[in-house]
Image (cartoon, rainbow, N blue to C red; front, side, top):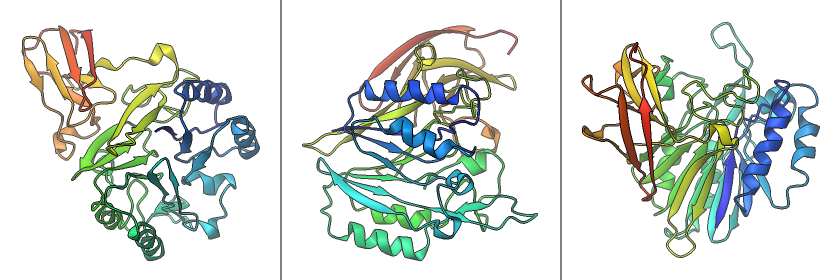
Length: 339
């Protein structure tokens, strides 16, 4: 069974965004998925809701959605009802949970945003009851706009564990504990406009790059802040074993590059856009590169899919990547010797 997860469209927020989303829909459907899941943040400007509905009206399959924070801003979501739209469904032997974590907030000088994220007691009770009757071998797919496990606040110098968090969710650990009894689990997220994959115990945490990339700031060609292409995630669930595999895809051919060079403050990295701690990244003549520790202060403002090169590595290298599902990719990279 195959489905596609896309997120952070930010439709109508820049001139070419509608054309970009149209291209994205066409690309997503080329994988012949059985359903689509929208991770939230459709957009804010007037007209975005009817435009989005019109654009997906011709998609001949279910399109599910979990609310993002900007649904409060656009009028899609009544602020008083934020957090009331968690729901679940079964499809092709898998159980899907759309977990609505966004809440409205009256902005203050200390908290200027009109939203935050929490798994409150009502939602936790609902989730517990929803999962209670399921066997442990049922594949579980949970989508929430903000990641339920993330290093993003720490890496970006934010206040981790703040009272009304904007890049993490209060009580996220309780959600993960509920999911942990199941053998095959993947959680899907957006919000941060970055690709970041890791595991919490055996649970796959899949934060997915935005369709809008860097908020369409460079029109159609707006890769995110770490250079990752604008795209979506294709997820496959094995009907027999329940195993969940996935791959990030760019929706524009010229951005469809898996490996690129990156530099920051004199440090050089291999940028594997859909890499994670389980991927093997090898440089010919130098061996395997270690994934960055996202909780190390020296890696602040860096991506989790950067793999650092040793200082004595040459400026031109050959890289081979083997992902945890056995898929491989390779590239020859040339770094600018100015660093």
